[in-house]
Image (cartoon, rainbow, N blue to C red; front, side, top):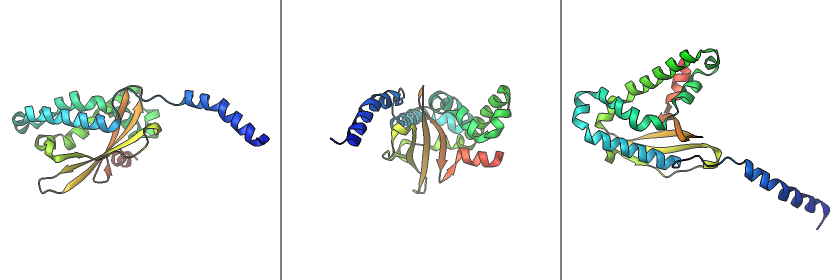
Length: 184
């Protein structure tokens, strides 16, 4: 074996265990696609159980969202991305108020439409990507009353607590990017 090849083999043999040991471990819990699908199915079951009450009072959807979906969203991370450089200058209380207001805005925008959402309207598409990157996009489609399909993508990141969604993109419009443009 020539000296260069031998040096490369030795370097690989020495460095491979270090690289493998430094590789991030898979986050706990289900992978992104399974997480989104389970959360959506749980939400749909809860909506079915409370459908009539939600039609009379759409604000009741908040309790369901808080219980079922919120644990799978990283609202702090999303709020940080929206505020950008302003996040560092904000006090912890201002950050919390912004995060809460940001979440409330999402609920106001999409909460009322939850009452009409049924299982036959949701399709989770096959996952594409590399989970080892720590980022994932789960693609879904929601069918409207007129039969048209609306693409809804969830962007997730690996956290010590498991995969967490931090952005929702509906028909190409990113929730985080849209708010970030408003904040400037």
